Structure formats: structure tokens, C-alpha cells
Image 1 (cartoon, rainbow, N blue to C red):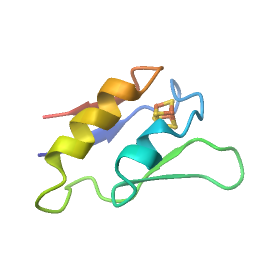
Image 2: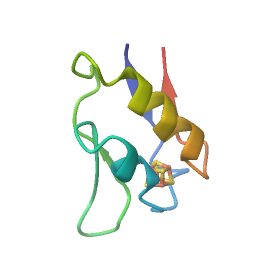
Image 3: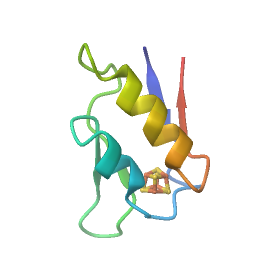
Image 4: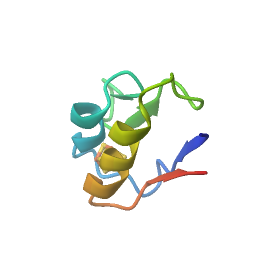
Amino acid sequence: MRIEVDRDRCCGSGNCVLAAPEVFDQDEADGLVLLLRPTPPPGSADRIRRAADLCPAGAIHFT
Ligand code: SF4
């Protein structure tokens, strides 16, 4: 799995961080998403799918 985030779309809701904190964080300066691990660790796939589902901005994509 490979993850991409679109910071231009992100509205800083933080849902992704709650869903998969091992992969997503929020920038302390502007609250926007930070992608910690574009290639996630084993076992994170379900949480990443949930993060993408919960993102109100449609800013999380994966292949
Ligand atoms: S869930 Fe979406 S809008 Fe919210 S911080 Fe994460 S990427 Fe940004």
C-alpha cells in the first residue's frame, strides 16, 4: 500500500490521526495533515482505509 495526502484539501479535522496515528499526524503550526509513513507498516491497512473514509475533505488516497 502507498498513501498520498493532499494538504491543499485538508481542513485539519484530525480524523486521520485518530484512526491511524502510526501513519498520520497534524502539523503543530497549521493543523494540516502530516504523512509520517507513505508506505505504512504491516497491519495498518484497515485503519488507513478507515482514515480515508472518515476524512471530510477527501484528502487521503492510497493504491
Ligand atoms: S482527516 Fe482529512 S481533513 Fe482531517 S486532518 Fe486528516 S487529511 Fe486533513
